[in-house]
Image 1: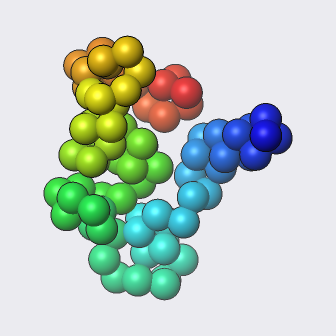
Image 2: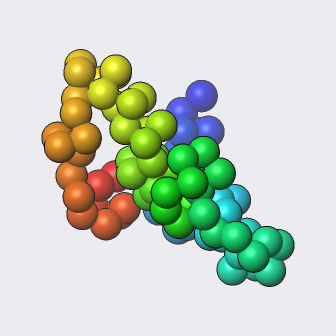
Length: 79
């Protein structure tokens, strides 16, 4: 429900999703590269906006939003 969305957004805003960048910071891995696209550091912002897979999702949803329509600011501003 709404509480789960609120917690998810809080975790995204505080970079506490268990992304490869977070795992590398915690010493759980040495590779912070995105597991899906292999083309960038896997941060919350990358997973939700910059990853090629995320861009496809944005392009096919949200009333046809393109990645050019998704703001390029930092994560807190974007959310």
